[in-house]
Length: 349
Image (tube, rainbow, N blue to C red; front, side, top):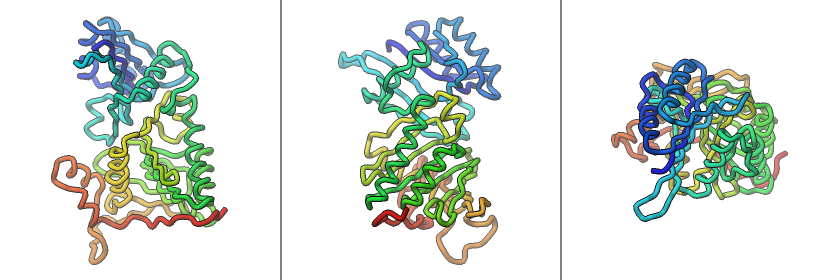
């Protein structure tokens, strides 16, 4: 191992990650970007930052006026085959052993040279205040993430208007950004099928005639706190999927440093689409669906028996059982049917 770079947004009082970073600093170059204004964790973050500095870790506090909310770790090592490689870990969740027990999150570990090079550039931005010309294939706020997300939505709109496969599935904590909401409305009018899995605040109104007919919004509230952000785009048949740290909220898009990363592996994209997103869209136990008036109704009221129809299906319970080997993907076949999605033959707006 030659060097380690890490962002830390939330830490715990007894963090094994920070202890490992302090230990590594005795032999390697270690750089950590600590967000000291992470709500509820300010005191522990400041204390750990001082401890790491005393141990020889290079500690930075990010950019003035911007919270460092992205989740990135970057390792450079000399591999046994004689080649020096970079490895990046990018995710949706904090490097916190406490919240990791009850938050649902996704992360990607990759040696993709373009992604690791972009991660290097993000750390240069955070530590040397050197804004790069290009962070592709990453999307980085407040630099280009909002604009590129809007372009991804517009691309689906354009595909729908010429009859190509067009669909968006987006999972996030909150949706309040007016620019992206308007873009989603335009996409719906053009014929794009849109499923939004939004745990908390959602300023978009689903199912409004002539405005959001093709948009469906659901919130899943269960045993675990839904925290992963996933963005799927059909892209005319050339599917693209991203994960990241940012919700579609103004504070995430314009006032924080956030990162979204594309899932380039077809196998990983298929797993996220068919295993994770599909599970949440089929949930009929913990899901609540938005009505056109903005209210939410349970997909199945608690305590109500099911004399007919599909059996109860909880996405969280299914994914836990899947991870423990107690379930297979065949379990999805008996779950509630997904919303019907049709291919647009011509532009409707």
